[in-house]
Length: 194
Length: 348
Image 1: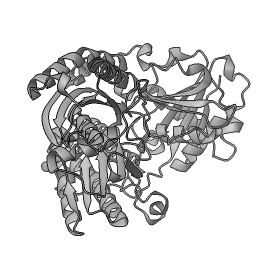
Image 2: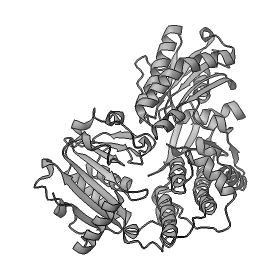
Image 3: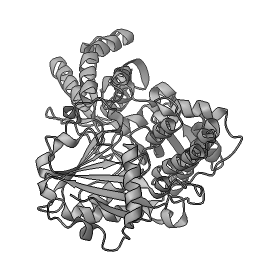
Image 4: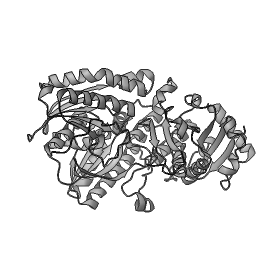
């Protein structure tokens, strides 16, 4: 399936992508987030949490490894927010201890690439990269106290669950899509980083 | 009940297996086993490994604490245990051990809140807590400002981090700078050599607009990102990264916001005392800056010694002893481990 690429210009817009993504998510769905420190993984998950209207503040789960946010709306899934950062590389999936929740929750795994794929045959991979890091230009660091640097977000659906789901129109009605040639460059750069 | 109840405290919310024994505000024993080295072997924390390590360390730690304190377990007044918040599987081991101990000895069981215990531990160092204080709890998993009118019953959250915990920011920035885990002490050390150049890293949630909604909340995610960008930019230009200067400027940004908001919270609530706890309380710059700023407003700062700031069993015992002394109801035998226990629940 074709990846959808989006460019956001602020943390609010990155959270908004999460909020829109939440409208598509159903119980049992798995979202795997990748991207370096400060790429916006938790910000995107905060948007998903807001969209699902789950209980509790969505904050970084790095320390507790996973946090369950129960559903507050009837018929909506709860959110299981997992962070594999502290787990290091050599880890068995069982160690994540999230399969108990997976059927009736949306499971979002930060730093989940290479770890969380066996959780589900159908899943969304979301790559986040800071726009300046992607372009190789990163001079105006300290002029930007709110961290309002843009992000390039690539959403790649995997499995039949996502066949025919209009990801692009659902995620990017307003946020400007990346021009094809830029998208190509970013894709290559991402591939090189993996 | 006696004025200085003898209580065993058990702590297993994360990596440390702690068993402490206190009598009133007197520390008798504080036995700790850490599974950090074991995690290092796996290149990270593995929840299953943490739980197993707690299981293996539990009985030896109980025996060591009992020997250290020269106390027979039969003579204690109660068993206290961290019931949450923390890692679910890790908490479960401590709660199960505490139940078994309390049932077999015929003693009351108190399942307590980890954060309240971090506040109560200061009684072992500086005597009874004042009637009202503000607590700043900063560690790898927590960054909270609490209003504490009664550590056994009335703990009110004033604010908390909306993204990363302060200790987490230290760990992640340490990794960016190539410093080892845990990041806190290494950044503190590196920062001593820094300060030749000052980098004005962002102070999260301090703009007037943010203060309206997040006066006592923290955000360290933007700071982490700013450090990442600064370091990357240097590397891309092929220039060396001045690790000590970046560490010093980063540490200054964290400590500036923590102390500014903590003192503001004291002034807003009329609290004359600020208690600081959690692993980040060991940071030398945080202590100095807190003292400086609090003194300007006649606020007294209470920080326990570093060994009592990090996770330990003595802090759980200290809170347990205070609960017994005040005649609070013990927990039920079906006490659950609650990984997301709200801070307002002191005893589950």
